[in-house]
Image (cartoon, rainbow, N blue to C red; front, side):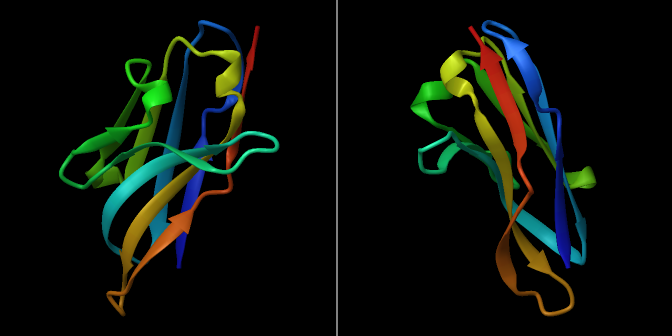
Length: 121
């Protein structure tokens, strides 16, 4: 029904930058909130940042001032610009979208497959 495809992860040195992208496709009527979560080994998945369809953003304290989330509603795509990366940012990053689907108009959360971000010291 709905697929979320992430891209942009990789290996970067501390202090470097990466940009993640997540594109949603399928039987989409509309998308409410889109966001990024991450899960490090041995830890629970946590919210990194999210953005509503109206552009309201929310960030985890640990990434404020370093990460910027944005979205292109016409492309059903959300981005995460990550600057000043630290080794503790190393994790699998997952995209999540709250999607209203066709033809039922039901609203459900959908997840991407995850992309690895590794920051070396």
